[in-house]
Length: 292
Image (cartoon, rainbow, N blue to C red; front, side):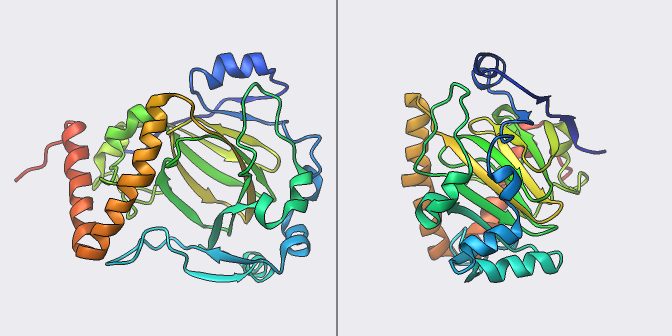
């Protein structure tokens, strides 16, 4: 058995009318190959350039290890100067990553290197964010808590992205009170004997190269593997429907806080309980019944 994945469509020279009609409104992913052709970032953005421009900024770094016991989820592993982190990236494989680095807030000069595309979408311009990772680094399967439509621009290398639509959630071992799949599952090489529901999920995959943009629709699940060191910029378009706004507020104000409180109270017992529920619920929803 293997994952049921198809290639994400690729386009060039797409008009805003076609993008809205064929991808944004129906919420379908697409790779737009030429959106960055006239950006300074297309020729400038590599590891050396960021070391020169932002090397002295201290950044939080994260690894692939799941939070344990009473640790808060999504806590940084350590902090380093950006330049020191880039030296690590250039030295060989590492699972260290930095994410959601606000360029406007931390390095406003770099905002001049890109432009907001004219494709009929209203962007949240206060939050252009950078994601940086080393060869072999992986990001657990998840969807974004704020349910944004993401435009993910990759630079300086290649990364693998796997996507699933919201209607595939029942197969993805979603952990209760979270927006992630079980962190123990490696979506790059999943054990489908242990997690058979994944084989029933229908998804998409792509190798995203330098200068390419991947449109990830709202609430779509995504897993990322850094095939090489990469710098990626995400521009976000926030949800407008009342239903999604209510869901965002629930994610941010209730679910996240409740989960962190339970972690502090029950520690690893709470994490183990949620993982057992993730397996039980997924197998029930997928019609998979275990002996005994």
